[in-house]
Amino acid sequence: GAVVSQHPSWVICKSGTSVKIECRSLDFQATTMFWYRQFPKQSLMLMATSNEGSKATYEQGVEKDKFLINHASLTLSTLTVTSAHPEDSSFYICSARASGTGGSQETQYFGPGTRLLVL
Amino acid sequence: AQKITQTQPGMFVQEKEAVTLDCTYDTSDQSYGLFWYKQPSSGEMIFLIYQGSYDEQNATEGRYSLNFQKARKSANLVISASQLGDSAMYFCAMTPYSSASKIIFGSGTRLSIRP
Image 1 (cartoon, rainbow over the protein chains, first blue to last red):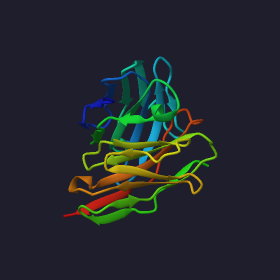
Image 2: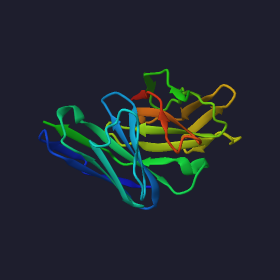
Image 3: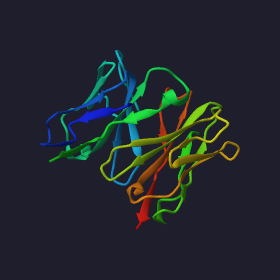
Image 4: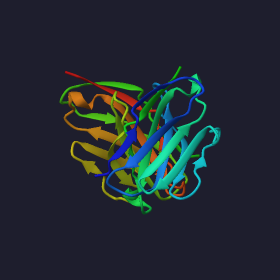
């Protein structure tokens, strides 16, 4: 159980195009999903928290107009990188948390990640 | 301030030996969760083990155990009988329950298992 998928796993695009990344919880309902960015040899950096049916909460320094997040259902959240530039090239990884609060219910399950390369 | 510290950037261990990965944390919350994740070269983050701040017993999951010392604010991961497939990056993480489920990650430890 607790499987999270992410699609696509690899994206290469031209500068100026938009890229959509999907994150799905396959066997549980995720009221909250998170989007992270990871640079080589570094830890994960939280970009935003996505709650089903409401606007995402962005971390300080993350441009909400550039990184559009939609959490349309309890099993799907999408991250759209708009007008991508080479500096947006990175590893993007999502996680999902099941409903409920406290204890082991706070465990986040991660998708396999998406490697984005903007040329 | 909420912080996770992993002081071992890299470790080499002989196959079949036990290994301890260090993790200390700082939080003013009384209720929090502690986690360990494994990230192989493929990039996926694999959940290994969870410890709640009020759990009196150390968590165990197969070959993984969490040595939880609350007074010292440490949550070391112990891997028994290491295997070649254990070579990966390991992240210690914490969720203070006041943080709206946000996870704070340490900088990670790269574990390499020698055959």
